[in-house]
Length: 86
Image (cartoon, rainbow, N blue to C red; front, side, top):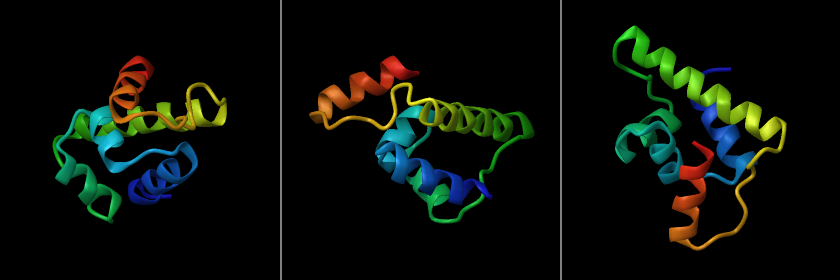
């Protein structure tokens, strides 16, 4: 499965938005939106590997139900929740 499909799956199953993923990956919203909609993860090899590792962490957390899916929260609580997960 490519990165785009993995991101869409984690968004669906983990109740995450593109904004949530942008915070998780510490990347600009338009960059992450591009990844979600089929764009390639650019950058140097280590940067791409770091994104892959962080995505893998999200997938494991969802599988083990450790913090994901994200419960219904206010926007500010959601940001705090994601920061605690990181």
